[in-house]
Image (cartoon, rainbow, N blue to C red; front, side, top):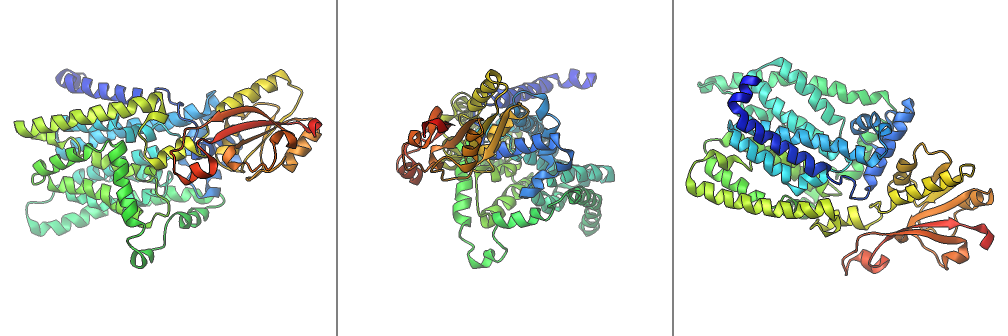
Length: 522
């Protein structure tokens, strides 16, 4: 290691600087965005799983793989802020992706310059920063799939079963993270494209057959790990819930254009806005100038980017930016290949594009880390993470208020009824008050018109009773005070653009409102 550092110290320093920058951009003000619906669910599951060993497979009840929650359940009780540690797990996975893009680029193009530029572009990409700062499984999925590709390449190049076995464990972890890991299993044989083919063409058949045999231990180990989930109940929910998210195969010949065309266009719209989109010209320049010399390597990366993207665009019933996030690392591994050419014109033009990319990325990242409401997020992402009921604006503050109330009157029970039974509320509130004595959170449904029966009975029993709900989920037909509900706290969410259906129905902003139930006023 000392000799390597003395010889390559400049490259090592550059790599460490990129890693340091990546970590800073992902961990700075990590909780500035309010908790998102799925984040609340995953963190709450982790808390329950940590408290109750018999519920270690709880995510299966909703058709979700449990690996992210398994990792988080060992950490969530050790930190005061559950949202921070939940997102920090994704930050660590994102750091592994930065390293992985460097390794993948170097394996395919044998250039430290290409590898450093590619990993630097990923490090500052708003798309990467946004999702590697969220307590969602997508950052971990992208990490595992990228390293499945890397170890697949190593396996066929060095023809070693031990590497194939290691890749089996990586693929197994991917399959325990999220269902789209199936794409990495299906695409794994394509790494034969970049293996060392014999000079004699007549020996290519034997080479491909032997390379394919190397994948047997990979698939066996991954299949065994995936079936660990059979130890818990509700294993069948994995396939049952999949039907809620994807169209059947018959959709391919019944209506292939819808939703394929709008979904595919939307995917590139997300890349254009959050990539930032100038990364695509960099990729095209690299492919154009290096296409003939590195045709198989480029083709492999494009296959790993386009195939999952096309299939998901074709069959997915719901389509958001995080569903395509794991396809991006192979594309970004191509973003620095122009550095392999020494022509001044190509270098100058590419550096100009890179400079524009840096300016765009830094501008987006600045608002993302300091004031997310001003970041140029795509419509679907801004709506879900900042404007609608899925955004947990104010939940942390309500939880702090309740904790202070519990300390002020330790002998009195506090009962909080929340909209819904699952999701941003009540899970978002539960995750903050978990383990606090004297506080109970219960779901009371949607379309609340009056004091729910459960809260009425709680207040009648002498408990300090509250109702917490978004204004878009309330349906009061009278002044809340006339119903025995008195507003205690109110937290505004981000503005909705005019003209949207939500704007017309619910108004300019949604609010999270905390009401105290007072029966003595009735």
